[in-house]
Length: 171
Image 1 (spheres, rainbow, N blue to C red):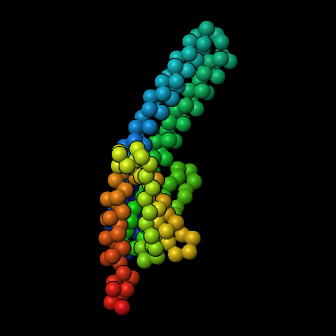
Image 2 (tube, rainbow, N blue to C red):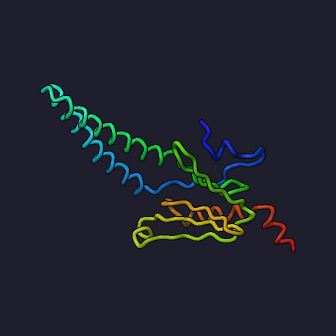
Image 3 (cartoon, rainbow, N blue to C red):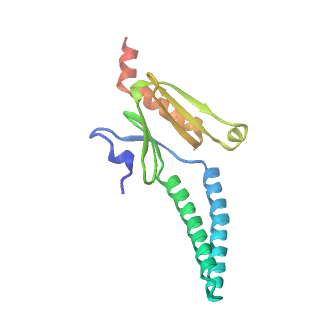
């Protein structure tokens, strides 16, 4: 199944760099999965127990709580899995969303600066945000990216290979 980036590319456009979430983002998800999944299972067991004791109202309440916890974990997983951060030979693209869709794009030849934001722990663990500023107010941000300095270097190589960079070099 092709994602948003592959589905929105022009005929002679191709992906050069893909950024991925840092493992800490996934670790947070797994902690949420264990906690909320455990609460959901406990509520489900309590609901079944209440139902067997003919306490239908509490059984329904516990069942609804279990369902809400499961939906929260599912939506968190889908949000992480369906987010795309990529650079093609023509543009930098960020896409997120499950039901609604949010995209941000800036053409490679319009990028004026690339900034990296890292916390103290982000520096130690290799995690950070990459901010692409284009002409005008255009801005694309990749959040919680693994190895942001490496991604920045790879994207700068794409920028130096762009036709706009080549015409500037010739001037």
